[in-house]
Amino acid sequence: MKNLFFLFCCITISLNAQILSERNRADLKNEILVDRFDNLLPQLMDRAGIDMWLVISREYNEDPVMQTMLPATWLNARRRTMLVFYRNSEKNTIEKLAVARYDVGENITSAWDKEKQPDQWARLVEIIQERNPKSIGINISENFAIADGLVVTDYNELKEALPQDLEDKLVSAEKLAVGWIETRTQKEMQLYETLVEITHGIIAEAFSKKVITPGVTSTDDVVWWMRQKVTDMGLETWFHPTIDVQRSTEALKSHIESFSKAKQKDLIMPGDLLHCDFGITYIGLNTDCQQHAYVLRENETKVPDFLAKAFAEGNQVQDIFTSNFETGKTGNEILLKSLSEAKKEKLRPSIYTHPLGSYGHSAGPTIGMWDSEGGVPGTGDYPLWVNTVYAIELNTTVYIEEWEKDIRIMLEEAGFWGTEGFRYVNKRQEHIKGI
Image (tube, rainbow, N blue to C red; front, side):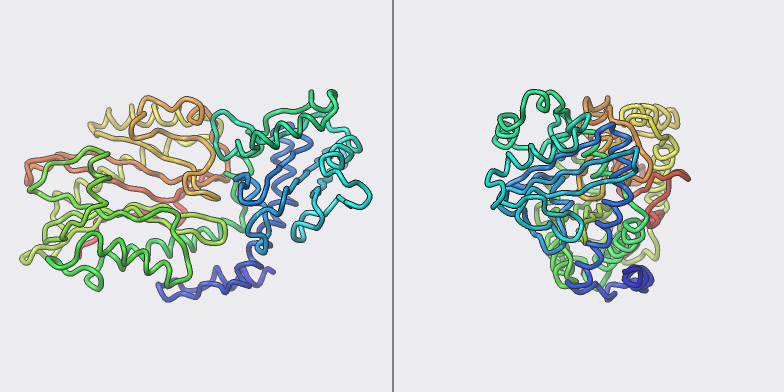
């Protein structure tokens, strides 16, 4: 399937770029899964110190982790689906088994013959006993919802089925589940660069004269243009986009007021500073992006220098923040150090960065929230690992003398932390676009 990756990643990106057919998307998704199961999962199990992992779900109530493990032709679990991963580090092997009537795609082999053993739970116990693991990881977590997918009914039935010696081996698989969700492979990063470029392309067209006619077009018109564009391209959004306006005649709104305002219809006028929040979903990955544009007045040929200077302060906060990324540091440590350094530069920052990847608001270290700038207990105490992606989401408040008021530069771009340091997945906005 290497040719599929070559085809997809070498496409010249435009808004008319080829999006893979459903069949080719399925092939690519399954290829990514093979790589993750065979090459990534053993490393993560060794790192977490768990040699057996159980992922159990029932149809339409899927564990968020299981949703990322199902092959392209499985849109949901079937009946009760039990997945068993057993890692023998001494032999360097990994077994991928399903206590189900059939294989789960080509990666996970059925290990249950109902005619021989009618009881599904009893068969699960047999599989565990045959392998005698040191620990049995299950998806229960106080801090990470995505790693807390084992529902109470399945949890209780699992404990009832297990003999005491095996029940005593049950441990939280939080670190393993979060690692699985947050870690990106090389194949996924090739795909990710394309997705971010497509995201940027849609925003660029939305913030153009093709879509916006000052005095005629509303913010809501642009939002629905973006939604329709995504649908027409055969993609999906994981949240409803927002477009909001800052202008010289209106006071700066609070974060909550700005979010509420963005959901209203606001006629776009010359002199408006526009801001968008937008992301797409494609082949198991998500993007999340915030950018700015300015609607030129009749006598203007470029974005005013005072706005360009304000935007540069937003980039400055980004630079300070991402320079503090370090493997092993917690989200809270990175947050507090970055805020302190930015304030020493006379900036007024707010940082609320989140993991990005299999989910939009994904699992991994939370690095601030807009209403928790002193640190985030639990998820903020989780450390930074390599080969992870983040929505570098933040803002800085800047006083504009020409408008006699504060404005807020709000930025968000996908960033990758790897063995060679930090980089943006596909560039970042460095200038306000003039319309």
